[in-house]
Length: 291
Image (tube, rainbow, N blue to C red; front, side, top):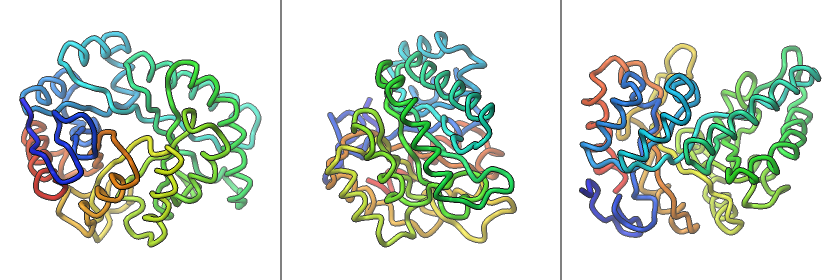
């Protein structure tokens, strides 16, 4: 059953391509177990799921692949790899090893997209440019490994408020400057509305990414204020904040993006609710604010 009607320039869940195809990121309804998530997606006509490494490893990579495949779902991404900014040699080796494991897990569950959160500044470090170069050095080692397993690395720029502790890549332009050092089939970028909606250069960077075949994933969450303490859990339900989702949908479509759209929300109020109810609401918000 196709739960999503056609939208201009954005075919629905049953269509062949376009950013009207809805995928639910697992973290949005983290209160659902993996089997519960798959069951509810099937019952609501949701065709795609973005998964996270911890619950996948807990359930088992092979078991996860089988569960999703038998339900007829597509795994649209795996979160996350990255944290590649360490200067200490031992920490760098550990990060590379962990990212190779993430690539193997992505391939094992049947997705071609591994999302990378690049990492913040090491303690006591103030050199943003040096940290970004260490990311490039790590990508040079990881990208050939990933492409050999049918996985593309997807650099996700995060809002600048996360630059110190989580991600020194803050704009699509910075993400593309890194990605473009490598073949497009090896390294792409993530367009996430929560992180880029404020940036007046982002539309042109989406065009740039599209021209180079670099858009690996398109994710949605709303920007709501005031932000909660710690800010990480400030992603809002679609329609509750400031983001014009149709604008961004149309930009990625015009740039040639034909993949899925993941709704990825970290929000304690949403997690405190019944998971099926929260998922059904997210589907309805997607219809109302994206299609």
